[in-house]
Structure formats: C-alpha cells, structure tokens
Length: 377
Image 1 (cartoon, rainbow, N blue to C red):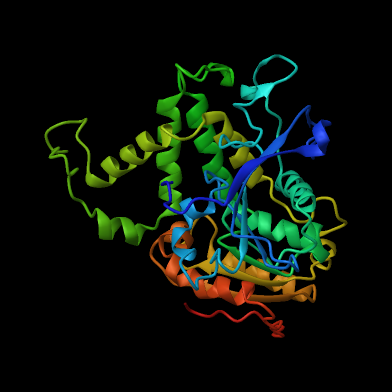
Image 2: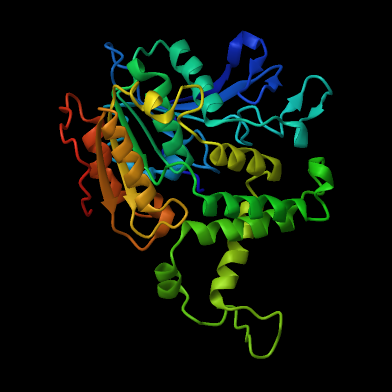
C-alpha cells in the first residue's frame, strides 16, 4: 500500500459505545474501542452523497492510498461530488483498536489476547460511526475481498441504511480458502520469535509474517500472470538456481520482496485476527437461515466475480448472487475477465470504475433482472 498524494479532508478517531465495553459475536469484549476513519470531500446539505469504501485485509481508512485511480475528476469517488468515508477495521494496526492497542486491563498491548472479531462486529462498529456523523443512508457501500464482505453485511444488517452495494471478489470462503488462510497463520506461529503472540516491537516474527504474505500473494494472483511476469527466469539479481540451493527464480525473488516490504507496514497478530474474520464470514449468522438474512436486503447490489480468482472463485460469487436474487433482492452479477487474479479489483481499477459508477450514480434505477447474467468486462 502506497501513500497517495490525495489527502483526506478529515482524519480522526471515534470511540465506540461512548467508552463502554464493545461486546463481540465471539462473546469477547473490548473494554475500550475506537475506530480510525478518514473522509474525502464534504457532506452535502441533503446528506445523501456518502459512499463508504471498505478496505481489504491489509488496507486502511485512507481509501485514496489503495484505490487512487477512482478519485480523479469525474470518477466514481470524485471528492468534489461525493463524500467518501474509509474506516479502518477493528483488529487492524492502522489506528482502530487492535492487537497493538493497549489493553486497559493490563496496561500492555493486547497481542495474542485480542479476541476473535467477526465481519458483523466490524460492520456494527462502522454503523455506530455513520450514525454519529448524522448520515441517514449511504448512497453506496463498496469493497473488494474482505471489504466486499463488509459491504454485503451492511445490506443485510442495516437494510434501510444502504441504497447501493458493490462487492467484488467476495463470498463465504471455500474449504480451500480456509485451508490457505490456516497455513498462513501457522507459518507465522512457527516463527521462533512468535512467543505465543506476545512478541515485542524489537523482536517480531518477521520471517513468519513474510512467508505468510508470500503465500497470500500467490492466492491473490493467477498462474497466467506469474508466467507472463516471471516465466522460468532466474532472479533478476543474477542468481543461478543451477549453481546454488539458495539461488532463486524470479518468482521467488518477487515473493521474498513482497514479504520484506509487508513487514515494514503490518503486524502479525493483526494478520491473524483479520484473516480469522474473513474465515468466519457467514451472512446467516444471527438469522434463521441465509435465505432469511438475504430477504432483508433492500439495496441494489452488483456482485463481481473475477475470472482468474482462485481464492474467491467467480463461480462462488455467481452462486451467492443467484441466492440473493432468489430472495427477491435486486442483484446483478458481472464477471471481470482478467489474468490478475483476486487482486484485479486493485490492479485494474479502470475496469471496475464503470461498475462502481453504476452503483453510486445519483438516481440510478434498480435493475429488474431476476436471473443472474454473466457479463464479460
């Protein structure tokens, strides 16, 4: 994640429950919790120009840092026209209460004692902030990956407060997705510096976190993209895999680089907490069934699958869209054809731009199709 030249018009923190404990789906409690958020643009007089952009696993409240191409004049997140809000999720290390925050019960960082957080918890906290800001309804809630999970959860838990929803590369994780996330967490725990999750800032499990990130990057990309970028070329540093066990191919050098730069910006415990929230995403939780939950939706939805995504296969996103339509909600499905894998919604923002515009445009009519059509973009 890079720093954008576009800075928020406001950035600050919001205490949840007015300082009272925040109770989680897991039964755990955060004695004191707050959200870090950023606002681009201004709230109009009618208070109907608000877009909530939900970040993915390692993103932040600063939406322009990870979706910069959508903020240009005339684009979907044009801050001259819209009020765009980004909220850092609970459990993160970018300002909201998370494992690096001080536990008031001990006076030390939570570390491994930070409780399990669900997508419902994250959205319930966001809803408190949106209400505090005096916003009666979101024109749209947007997100990819775990951000798309948040967007979908909004439409179920707060149906009257969301007009439109754009979710890309998001559905309940398959067994393969759960397995891949499990391996990443175990890799981190096997680092000698892990210390039961109670490591200090001078001795973090950087090797484990870097390896976990490398595995995650593989799930975010596609085989075709790796072949195109790296082929079977030796690492660009000049290493020769035929001459040394330590010498790498270019693909390995790329993954090692991604791990190194990730260590500079993220916390291992936060990675465990948020990836667990991704695992446990289930729209039926708190309702009689998934169908009962989906029948609550009042927003118009656009679900986007990515053709080369093997972490969240397009077929899984398509299936979810069909179930939403079967619940008589207004939902379209579009398939984004890309070799960028799961990361396509970030790597090819120009392709998602018109899809987001469809959702956020003022007064856009609901689309009445009752059968999901797979469209190529």
